[in-house]
Image (cartoon, rainbow, N blue to C red; front, side, top):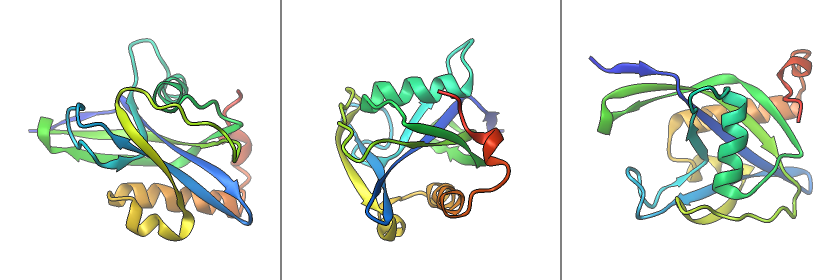
Length: 155
């Protein structure tokens, strides 16, 4: 029976360009364990004694060199069956806004990066749960809910 784990985080990085937004994708290196050479968002594990928010900030810095201008919890949990290791992963999702000119500094787990315009999300993001998470991010960006006050991460 597959184990259910909740020890990961997902971070969707975006920047505002003109009237729209673009989302960051990073290319997994050939040397990584699974899903080599696939375009992903920032994913990572929560270390012992670390909160999900702390893990998201750490992974963001390690994988991209970025620091957020704004960050908030998305009202969505990303779930994924990780077939190579037979477990179901449930992850809190965070959205991070960065400056349009923010410099990306990739860590060793990634070979390249790209910015994906909103109109290309359906083609660029391979997993259904990623597209669903992004739909929630975009919805929150378009019409801020009264809950946003409690979803913002104090930086």
